[in-house]
Length: 78
Image 1 (cartoon, rainbow, N blue to C red):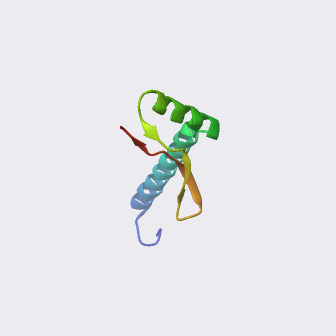
Image 2: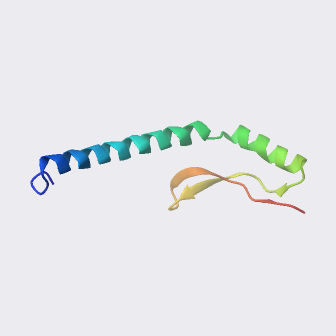
Image 3: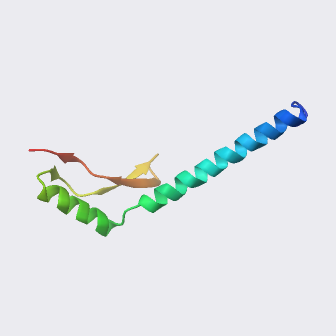
């Protein structure tokens, strides 16, 4: 890419890439900070039921069948 762009354009592209990486790292930190344990999800289920929701158990949510991405909780009002 350096041979195709001038120095200034190349620096801008490197800066853009660095900003993208930093944003991705911040997003990952946010996601990890919001992660819930099985016990915490149990408390969420109990609270939901106590305030009138019907819900089954919290289930692990996977992307593409293998990548754990979080929890799934189906709620409905009777």
